[in-house]
Length: 540
Image (cartoon, rainbow, N blue to C red; front, side):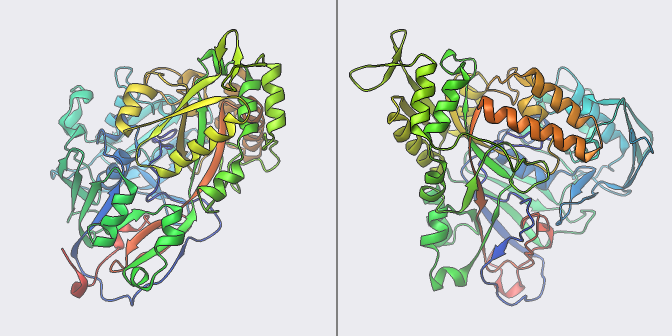
């Protein structure tokens, strides 16, 4: 799942492709000589999950957004140094009061069916996003727009009723083709399975549960991508995926820490692949269903956090390839509060807090009992992510030590999303969010976003957090915004609606026949259209 401007946070199968937001450059191992750029070949990428809907406005899963990222464009995008630059917009002007943005669109851009892209497509995308009949989690940023206009084919302007800090970044949203969607029910469109975009790759084939195939778009406005085909293979088990990588059936995947540290340090592997490592713009958490009376008392949530040894998870699960998370912001970014007082590992305090919350009696199995009910709950997580399963097992063991009985249930990703998360049918979850450059967290934490299929699915509600989120997105003053986000982190650290667990490192591995990879603060995928394989090394 993703949040915020232009679908900017996402439920994580995040082993792949995620950009970093850090002063550190991603590091790589070895590379061959550059060779001569050539068109052709294919890249076969492994993923544990299939896409759900290739109209990104209607999707909330990482696979759908990964594929959409190659098929569609926004008006703006982030460059390798995480600066906003033009995409479908060649340039833009911002009024002195900051309330009006006028985008000057590229001319001659073609949709994959040959129709020209114009401002009508942007206006349609805006209108369908804010349409109450459109079941999307991403409308809030665009509801801030007071007036949207397309005065000519290559100009689009928006005026906001009041300052809105994420305004420009929000137009990184994927623009949809008006000529194929306008006047139709978007939820029934065939574009969900056969998308038509303006991006560097055009849709070719989707075999559900197996693969999605994209072909290079020769008329792409930034130039034809060198790599002729992008194949997205769905392999639900990470160990099987790694075997496929070694056997030559994959060119790229996200390694687990144990794979990175212990299974890839051989001369043969180093000759065939390049490994990369950088802090992910993401965090993993244990989230509680706050509608469940068992978790209504914050002392219970504080106790659970106190009973969990996060350092044990970092070293035992991530092999040290990550860092402890204390809130929804990546450590070291400007909105992250370095002085946050989180609940560290303290089992004695956990037992004391549970007793204060009424969990004093213990049954014959050593499980705490209150009002005749044992303290037992189930943690759900997604299939194919071994890190989350191992994390759940460590948490299960630690909570047993303080009298809490935890069961673990692993579900196929689409089922977890559709049958449990969307319906609020869970006790607790181990999941993750990706984070974006702008720290606005409206879609995940505001109390207005707790409805069906929305992203505050744990049901967190706080009037003060609501006010601070609104205040933070309603000013261009960075210091004022920082004060808002610092205070939000203090509240979340006290309330513990999540136990924030860790910020993992991204560990992508790519076949060494691919050249042109230039690690940067944005990770490695930002310049994918410039990757190439010398003609003599092409295999497809």
